[in-house]
Length: 543
Ligand code: DHE
Image 1: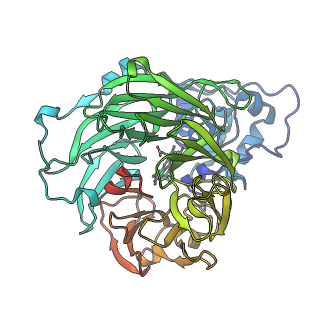
Image 2: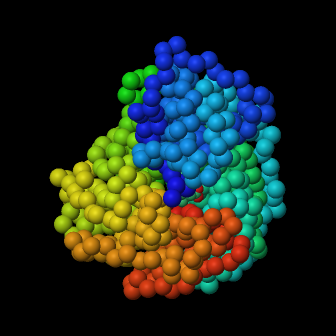
Image 3: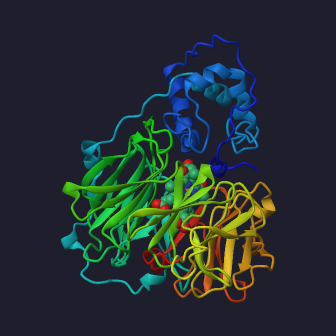
């Protein structure tokens, strides 16, 4: 039941209870260059997401050699093989790593981690390509697409995105991108689409072309997850920003060409112990609607940076002390407050993007994972923002209206009971009374293959469970139902049925009012669809 997604789990107590090695720990085993390279690659693909490139730990435990050598080969081997209840995947028994590979990884962890190279302006510049310069791009929209209701869909394992027309549900085009694209964002004008791969490659896609395609590309590091674009009045489409996991840095670029302008390192001191951290990765980034600022969340140090892009030569950054292990988040309905999960700390930090300060720190359930979260009006407590959790079945509702409901603001006002843990994303829409909560990482295959729907006008009513993968007619494989996303009108919900690369996947469209199946998008080109980004909703932060 463990998939790659299990890498999400927090504080995987990787080494807890492991038999202690005798004092005078083992020396590092010698690996050949070929073995070392293979292990390095496996580590990068499977382990670094949670444990960090330098193995300092974040979502997973630290694995520096002072720790691994004390525990020893056998304990490491057991944990890699069997995993742990706290979230370490069972790489051995799941068959994802062979026994020889598990041995190799245990030995590799007894060696010091190699430091990957930096990626400064010279390297970034050398990857930058303008495929169609601005003066050769269309002056107006050259296609008949209803761009505001277009969906950009991540095809995770094929290194592509699909653009799908919201009305006809036809695939308009498939565009080659970086490796395992993570998110899509839209420029303020609605014309440009930015997507970023895990390999830190960004594609700038022009939606005005007869057939939308990449007009510029760049690589801003070795590994990344986030990209965003300037939205404040007067700066529409002017800048793009991307955050890297390695090297730990963010890069500000020209919004129309991706020309790299400025690189800023995020290395520095942690908020709690105020110790130096060599690998503070950039997690989510959003663009303020109140100021010419990007909100940049630095995972390992716990700082939220408000980066003022009005004068990047004399860059002003407000550094907000929040909480360590910042990951994903989104705005409240007024778009003034940004709420972000400090996932391994079971908290949501709240930043006022008008006054540029921290206004709340809310204790929620185990390992909150909101995506961008979602907003609705609670019958009793007024406007709330919601998050689901990886570590438990609850949905936490946080009051977001300090004027009208001051007592509830920045507190957990209620907790709903969903179908189980392993939730990644949830969504409603201003026009809807349905709250959709996924559970793709739940170990129970049936739960992972279905979605829970709450009635936001009557939250005492238990959620209805819809068997989305069954509706898609997918029997083969272990499909995971992930990330509900509304269309522009707010009357349809699109849900991915994410299966293995060599199995059939689909997108299921549900009528929001009736909660009945509306259509199933199936196509051989639809390989491992995960995130879906409706142009209008993404642009206007409607969720
Ligand atoms: Fe994500 C958002 C990081 C695994 C699908 N993911 C994000 C964001 C971060 C992040 C920092 C916020 C970006 C922003 O808003 O600027 N994700 C990570 C990881 O580090 C992690 C845990 C492990 C990894 O190795 O990458 C990880 N993510 C996954 C997946 O396995 C998912 C489920 C499938 C996939 O496509 O890879 C996945 N992540 C998503 C999606 C979003 C996202 C769909 C955007 C959700 C939204 O509605 O905004």
